[in-house]
Image (cartoon, rainbow, N blue to C red; front, side):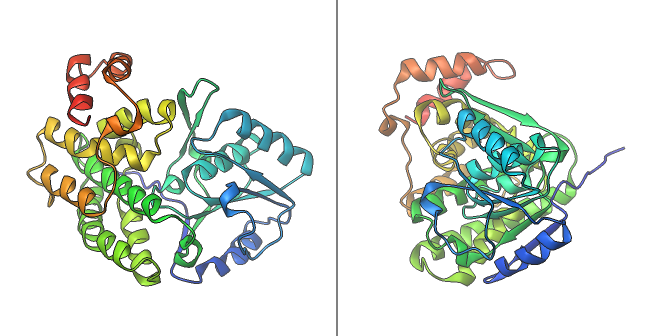
Length: 322
């Protein structure tokens, strides 16, 4: 008998100005001493609270920075965590909250990668190797999608994480098994992303359009486990952290080629060619070689991933994206 398990955070707020819901969420959760986990680029942004501790996290959540944040938060005696930024600070905040006994965590995302919707967290070690953990307690207690808080996000980062959301929707839809709820949401996410991402590029400060982007990204991730373990995601993670490529960009590089390889996209409202065209229209990266990666590095990545798919097939996808 098919079963669907809801995995979204219990409370999701959206719309320009919705960051003011943060105070009520912190009060509801009994948080008084707040650890803010963010990035250096967002330090000084106006948030409606005064943190007792601020921890900054770099791209791909280096584990030494995460461990330092955990240590500092423990010493500061915080009783709750707010993450502000993209996937790296959000994932780091999840680990801080979990390691300190399951503290409440409210996420205020500034990209479309929707790490805030997943009960998992990724990090990298000193060699750049990507690792991750899954635990139901990693899921944030509340999420706030406030378009005003995203205006400082560089447009390429915003749009490339929008392609990451498209990647979620496509891979969730194509995942094995029956998941009719996710299928409806994924199809709507695809439609909304194709419609709203070009408008976001044309009107970077239009808060209504950015809110549409955020809603589409939310809709893309109602089957988080299957989406995050899809082939495009896995192949992207294998080269992303090691070579300093953001997650959103790896989706730009690989998603159309993975769709062509899988060859099961007839039911989707967007073909691999259409996805490729959208990425080009948005002016986003399309070639792996532009990141200084050659066939030797791609052969290593394919060999390490081989299992369900052969190393030869995986290398073929990588080379198609060269």
